Image (cartoon, rainbow, N blue to C red):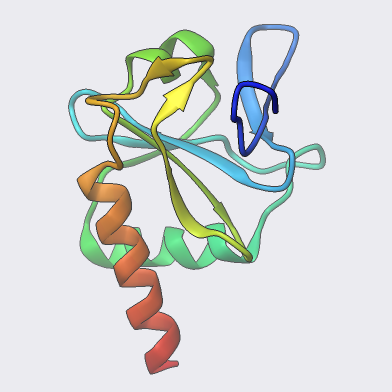
Length: 122
């Protein structure tokens, strides 16, 4: 928190990101693929994550539900978290390193807008 962090991502013994302290973690790879860890008994499913997965399918976006490494997160074009309180929140720095160009990613911002449109129409 001294470094201005708003969230912490947990890393397992194999160096893979599991989830945030109260969020689900996502990255967008350099080739535009969305990646988030699959859920199981150790990972919270998250209602926002579940809705976003449905929106992604409807939009035909490429998604992989799999573990991703800290190195993949450092190299990502974008990163973001999802939660009931933050909806879709871009991540611009990880461990002090800029994600992508260091600004909120276009896809994360679009997904945030899409989520709000969906919620308003439901």
